[in-house]
Image (cartoon, rainbow, N blue to C red; front, side):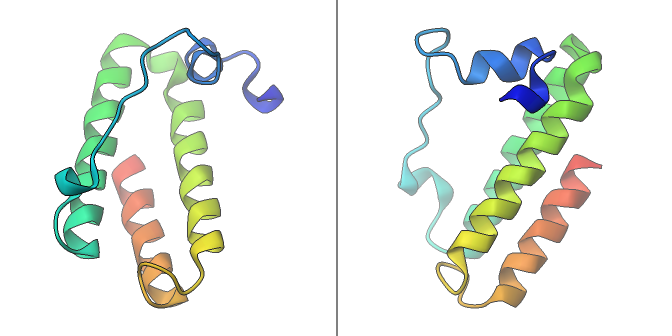
Length: 100
């Protein structure tokens, strides 16, 4: 994660043994892709709010990383869970709005 080498929070996300990973069971995300997206957007909003309060200097890098990961996942999914590229694009737009 050289791009974020000066961001302690992001570096800590990728260090082994530094923090306990958050585990989300598939059942927690709901029974449809739409429900899963809404819940994920809630998690993003919650994390953004916490970071905004605790370490606002790291917020921009965090938002950039989250969007970048979402973009790569959507690109890799192609016509996977959401059935079409248009749906992935719609989810990315929601993510962008949640990170604004």
